[in-house]
Length: 491
Image 1 (cartoon, rainbow, N blue to C red):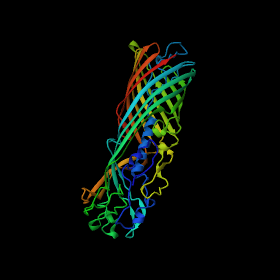
Image 2 (image 1 turned 180 degrees about the vertical axis):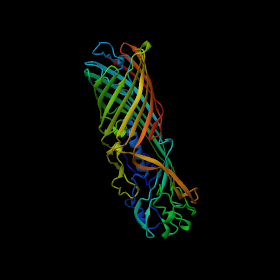
Image 3 (image 1 turned 90 degrees about the vertical axis):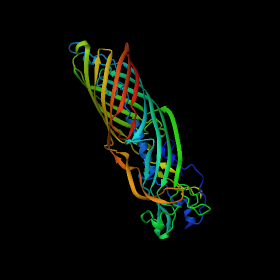
Image 4 (image 1 turned 30 degrees about the horizontal axis):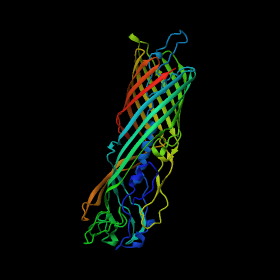
């Protein structure tokens, strides 16, 4: 049964059945037990459909925490060779976009930058979100015994069609404390819009009738004992097992429409603090180290934030060639960092809470636990090509290895063969194969993207930025190519 009260903004609410209330069942074994909701549980384990939705919640939270932000490093800096007083090659490039520049902006200088990105997620582990097939392996025990057997739930499949969109507008402010140390703060405004539609749900329980009391659960039932007791595995307990003429009715085992849920919210996201210092500076080589501190200021229940503090130490290396003809400068760069996050409800599981004592409600409300969000080891390698002092082309390859220490809950496609399914309204059951996503536990995987951008110095120290972010793999949630627009000014 799926009658549950769930946290605002999380996917499992689409599994709440929104139909008629159950009524008392007639002509069944142990009717008093079968009509008592305390004898049944709503599965919330990792292999249940409710458990699978926790994997989706963590995936969205992870995507939110690893969305690359436009670097707060200044596009316009002036670096002089302390020995000769001549400008260094770094003065000509307008800097990277997603990777961090190793240089600081200079003592008592300010930088202000704004950027916009919109993510439209379309697939999960290579499967389209419209729809995503889910498989509940079930076998959850009840407190009801018939024919010497404890009644257990049977496999269930359903389709969930989702639309997941995240947009962020980020303002970055940077101040140069010294010539070798600066501090930045990122202030994001997040818009999350998520909708889900659960449909075509089916319980693989045969025809749902207990024709042979002693063969209720044997091999999913066969022959004259084809199926479990109808009263245990059904979406609508108020639907009788047969109509007035005695014809079997499979309506309680098939549900074309389960429920729909949609929500969009706009608000402050998680504030980002960045501290960076230059530890080595040569004419053609600069090395910087720093730390990002992400504070849980966004509402995690509405996917505006991650719901926990995270820390990311990083290393940035910038290289520069000598200026070529017409002041062309080739500037390779490398970044590595490791983000460690705390516990959040977006990393936890849904668990059953106290069952209602009402005889008309079958199911359980669900509450959330907290668990660690996955850690993320990130790296980037790319280059800037300065086309004179006013134009820079940037190409980057970005990688995230997710879950080395704290794995990320994942799902894989699995099939269960030879389960009896009702094929028509006459109650006839045929053995079929049930297929869908099941839990893969906590795993680690990589995500890889390419970033292709351009910076132009419009006037003075005002710099415009455009970029296109393209994912190369299909692991976890994958978005369409993401454009970025930005403006920055240094003074």
